[in-house]
Length: 76
Image (cartoon, rainbow, N blue to C red; front, side, top):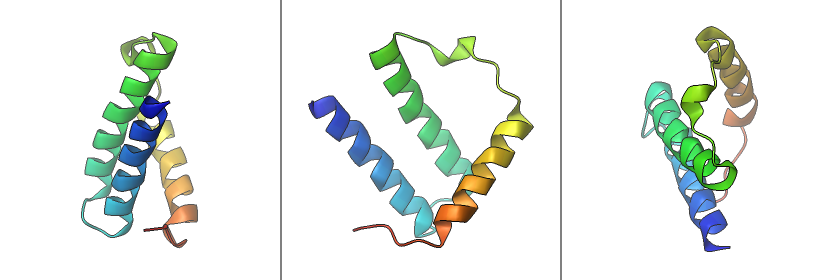
C-alpha cells in the first residue's frame, strides 16, 4: 500500500508545483511521464516504449484537461 501513497504524493507534489507556476508545462509533462511510466511498469509489468501515441493528440488532450483544472484550488 505504501507504493500507492508514494506515487500519489509524487503526483500531487508535481501538480502543485505546476499549478503554482514553479515549473513550466513541458517540465511538468516530462516529470509526470517518468512517474506514470514507473507506475505502469511496476503494476502492469508494461514498458511505455511499446505504446505509440500521437504527440499532437496527447498534447491537445492534456491541454484540455489542464485548462479545466488549472483554475481549481489544489489542497496544500
